[in-house]
Length: 370
Image (cartoon, rainbow, N blue to C red; front, top):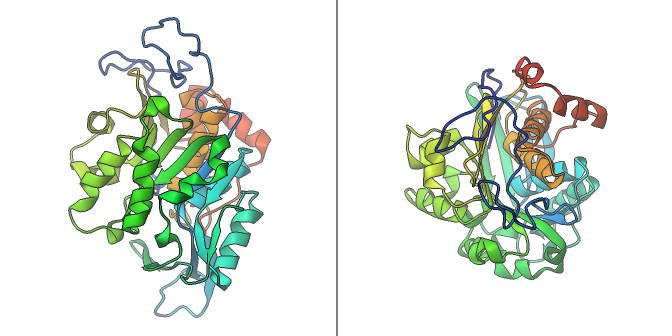
């Protein structure tokens, strides 16, 4: 998903009852496994969730990416810049930037593009040792076409190595030490076997899972037949533990009049639902009725592609660190800003001291940046 630079946003919304809102950061944290709403005594209520002692495993396709350099029409541009692009590997790379142990599982063609992708993701300190090399299928390719109304993306991924992924990839031993597995709505759209992969990942009831599962709806209309995406993505998202969805894509999929509360009614089961309203704000709704909204800081936008992945990584890193919902949302915004400022999907983060200073701002000081 992408974010835009428009300012605005409301104050953080703290614990509420039956949808009521209380302003201010209450330090709310996501409920730990076994926690009881209303303050009941449960032995594991203080345990961090997701676990802080495991890796985050991201599963999905990454492609080689071509874009005009400098950004201009493909009709007239004379040079193309080669980079890599993939929602799940973007998340893995930003998690690694933020000091979280990250693994990327996928398949690549045994070709120069595949080698380029593998090297780029590995250079970001992501474990790529579980990525398969397919001698019979190519690495997927996308081409970006900048335009006055935004960047259009052309995909050349049919029959790619990653489209042949299936449920067996979840037998990878790296999942044994995972605190969290991250998936997106791109994967089930690639092929029936990829759909079966996501189905298997979500088949275990949440209470019985060895790791948490996060799912970014990440709707790509070009990959779906008309009318299919709305039903499939809603069903998959509602079985995850943590869900990310843009308000604009939720409105496109499930109803033009939806707001964050309306999305929650459609997706009642995830422990955490994060609704991103473009460059305005992001709202986290947990299973105990807490609703926390953090406005997005003003950011100069070079290209929005990849910002949603960066936001998801920042938010997940905040959770793994054991932070509050407010700090996780702030870290999501900070990380997204690094993607908005570059033409590729992966931009440089501020130094650690700057990140900590931003996370420590008062509510008023943070809001002044919006």
